[in-house]
Length: 609
Ligand SMILES: [Zn+2]
Ligand SMILES: [Zn+2]
Image (cartoon, rainbow, N blue to C red; front, side, top):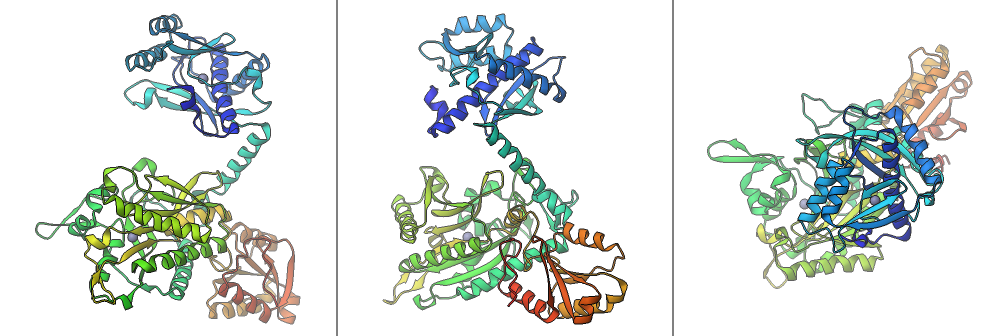
């Protein structure tokens, strides 16, 4: 490994950050050794957002309360402008040197580097800075004083096993955050705070959206009435958009015989993500389905299809079950049971482009409407691995088709190899969360493999049987993943059309209760999720409660409102309130629902004519 490899191909800023974080790990280790001279050092790499170092403190551990002391010492070391100087030692000399300092973990690593021929011609690389010396490849800053003022903060302490092996000693890992400037660090801390406040698991609990239950099982979220409303609204929207785009809905079962997956190739290609088979009847085994595709292919195959039937677009919000390791499960983002906005489009080769185009248009419509602007498009291609063992020419041909569509649509995208589905290239929508971490929210795939495997055909104009192309798409992702993103983007404040409670009517006193009830039933008759706050709490408390529940519309009813049949309308995200005649308010709410107005954003005005 040489220094260029360590650095990668990042921008100058990345390289500075990398060197800074690397250097701060050394600076922290030096400071820690001042406090605990007998501590043994393990690994101390730069990582995302900062750096860490693993220490073995023996029976003199360091705790969170010591971090401030360590930070102060680090600042002193930075002030001292200690130069980072590289030198090399032949493996034997290196080992002797490390032994003189009782650095057992480093000795083990030095031996491993030498034994595997990674020592380099000049020997093992060491960097000294002041009194501190560490076996390391670099790169670092020129001297410790290059670290910008206020650029770092020690964050937390955790345990970690030496070399990640639970049979080896448990070490103490000290994490530090480090950025190119004090402002950048401040910005990160603010974003992290916001992300914690908006964490979908936390808001999901506070807003009664979903629960998990140990007896039901991990990764198997259950939707509370409030969360079920959001799912239903998303699904209703998808149903409308798909109807307009010529889709037809189907419904298929969530378990199936293993033969189906042997035909599709999910067995063996996808076996790791599937649950073990269930023995059923005699000599038969069933699986929980990880995908809806094979069922839809069977529906296609059930009738003789003509070119006149194509494109055939089959849609289903389908329940699928995927095995995820216990450790990787996280809230709604990584789960074992999910419900997917799925559809499969069967089309002729010359329909591929227009279908792909229409689908990407649908993606763009959804994402723009939901204001999920922070995404990038990734074109995921095959690589040389065995799971892509179909014919190379077909891969190249279908990849070219997708690339061509993206180019012609003027969509900006990055290409990544090795991310394709096993049956074809895909376009992934990569969304960044508040912390800038990227996740695939949904994909659109061009499949040239399954039609063959399922012997799907259509009768073409010339009377010949031909293979259709299949496009798999799921623009609204799974309910679980999509809603986890929406909760965080919106901070739990949903627009009126999706909100579990669309309007709460708050009577100022008991006298206006009959009018409040009249409004409530007028709204409920029109299928609005409306309710009167009849708790008997103080007026201010009632308002506070509605705001805490992030209810988008509060209709305040006092004597004046009751007398002239109006409401005083207060929105969740806007300070000003307006008083409007009830009939007008009702009309306005209907428009908001019909047009799915994103009134959870303060720049969106109430559609009052
Ligand atoms: Zn280093
Ligand atoms: Zn599919």
